[in-house]
Amino acid sequence: MKIFYPVIAVCFICVCCISLTAQPSWKALPGAPVNSRHDDGFFINEDLGWVAGRGTIWKTTDGGSSWGEQFNSGKIYFRSIAFFDSLTGVAGNLGTNEFGGQTDTNLIYRTTNGGASWNPVNNFIGTKPRGICGLSVINDSVIVGVGRVRGPVYFLKSTDKGETWVTKSMSSYAADLMDVYFTSPDSGFAVGGNGAPNQTSNGIILHTTDGGENWEKVFTSSQKGEWCWKINFPSKNVGYASLQRDTGKVVNFVKTTDGGKTWHEKFLRSNGYYVQGIGFINDSVGWAGGNSTYTTLETTDGGDSWHDANFGVRVNRIRRINDSVTFAMGQTIYKYQNWSPASSVKDQHTSLKGYELQQNYPNPFNPSTVIEFTIPPHISNNSLVLVKVYNSAGQEIRTIFDEVKEPGNYKILFNAAGLPSGAYFYELMTEDLKITKRMLYLK
Image (cartoon, rainbow, N blue to C red; front, side, top):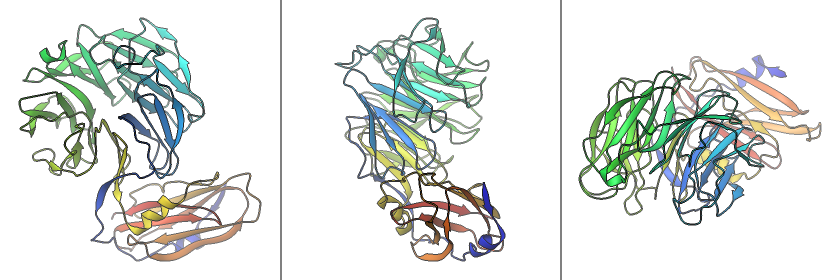
């Protein structure tokens, strides 16, 4: 490991504040695949991620600017996908007899090479479920899942990165289970409905404190004909769950402010809205979508009021990456970020060619942070590498690294003491690529 500290750190001190005119917004990514619906997505960071849906899995390594297809089969419907790290992940199959043409009975596909290959997993201790709708990674080896919509309902747990799974029938608690979220190996939530067919169902939220051995019903919705579809916690205490209704009556959602001990319904829309995906970037700002007729909805006051967000068709999953980037999976892939001129530089590169530029850490930071980048082994020993800094308007501030370096990992220490708070972009450049990331200095 080569580490450069004092000289470069001094050069990195720039004096630009964040632009007050640049505001975060949603865009449909022009290079993203279009499907009837991408049901789920999972991102290791704002560059590396996967999306899954009807018969397909796609991967991006450049924040959604370009995508590569990794799996394509009309015999399967992927409803969920989750990764432990950049190499190991699992995708859950909704199962047969739910939509036409889905005949693949393999419940789980697993990869250990970043999705280059996906192999079926059939190591179940207990009854093999019919399908999986939701997955939640707990730590570097434990993952849980639930399913399925319209039953039969099961809870699944793996402690070896998805190689083997222990299953548990949940028929005494629910008739449908659609999503799951665990905050620790012991504590977690599952959402769904209590009636089949769904016209007789109330939405329900279940809670466990012993890793899924036992469950308690902590919420039942007041109306029939609905079920909880997705659950999202932007912070430890504040959480949200969507309530899907096919037709009629007031459309509500569910919120907790005490870490899931109690939940209460809140008004979303007076007329019919087929809501499924729900996600928040912080406790107050979030979105709910799923309808193919109306736009996704947005709130900036924790759900007290909602307005059109002017993006998104059939949004089923919303994933917050950090305090400035969020992705939404629907008919295509949508991205929420500050679309400043500097960020557009990132959209132009199509291949990382083995180079890596890590997110600075910590981020946000005060007053110091570290920038780390990698020159891949196949690059010759006379590779010129530049690292430049831009303000939020895309104006170049300074070149802070301009050296010929051999392959390896390099670190730059940045100390922003004395500077005003603000957003900056740092860019790794070689002769044929550019990689840009955003950093935020908050005092």
